[in-house]
Image 1: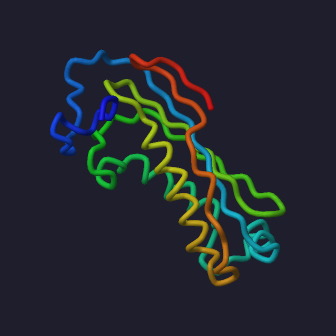
Image 2: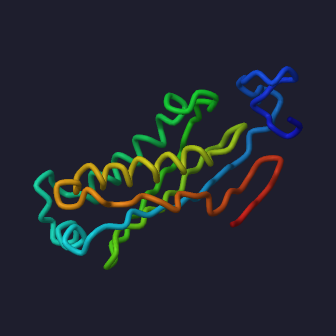
Length: 155
């Protein structure tokens, strides 16, 4: 189990001790998508969803989720997040979400960026499900991370 930092020598899950790490500027970018019917896309684009402004609500939901990631993912550290930017782009087939999360801390914000995207897309689903219950969320992934001992990474 070498390399799995959330497992101890006996294979039991534990929270990684980041106490000895240096505080550095860290950033992560994640993306994901929800595919849907043309009818649902048009309703979102036209602001015709009965529950309200889908993109505005999804953006706020994603930002809130990033800030609460440590409450949702058991082994994540609570972090002093300095920035969450969540962009939602509507096209003919659905909505793409992209989140950028930053902190000055001892551990990265990859999980926060992934959580922001996931919850934003779930919110789109929730708000538009009356028009299309067959929507598909997928492609949630990390695009880039910077900072920390392991340095920069890009997909």
